[in-house]
Length: 95
Image (cartoon, rainbow, N blue to C red; front, side, top):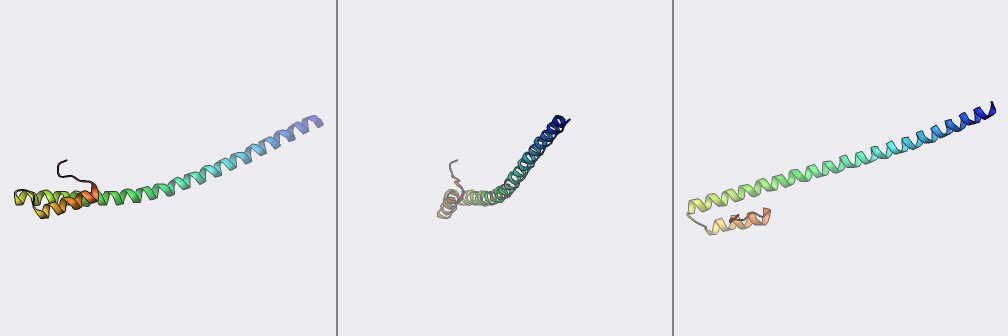
């Protein structure tokens, strides 16, 4: 009888240890998920900024093209638009 009780005690202790290890693993997973969520928010904010810059760059490129069409070619003003657009977003008149 004592042997059975000892075996049951050992089994309960083993289950308790496994349960504690599982709790620690879950806590670590929750912490990792929270970090990922924070970083995702930062990436989303950066993406919005990039989209805004790209939109502004596209507007500058379009304005440069319109100016060129109105002037019948490239003018000093068009060159300034294109240069600024290239500096902001890498737009090139020949691409």
